[in-house]
Image: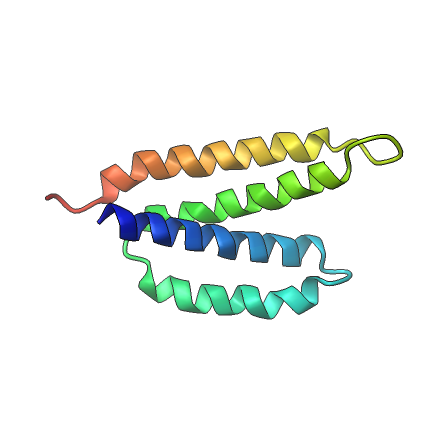
Length: 109
């Protein structure tokens, strides 16, 4: 039970990262990523057994925020601290939410 729920959580995080990247980069390469995001959602939505697994999407969005913060670090770049703060908030919300709601929404053993 735990292994399949974890797998779905991380699959949702991949889908969340794809959706977030396609929205943030919509003016450039985002439209090329959007079909892959839609395909990931198309396969994940019917296979989701526990709504808590969808919180992985927040972790995927956090990964994109962390990547942007990493790219914008250093001299000459923009200040990436706001992306870092957003990434931490999304990661904490996704992981803590999954930890709380996975137990609460799980069927009794």
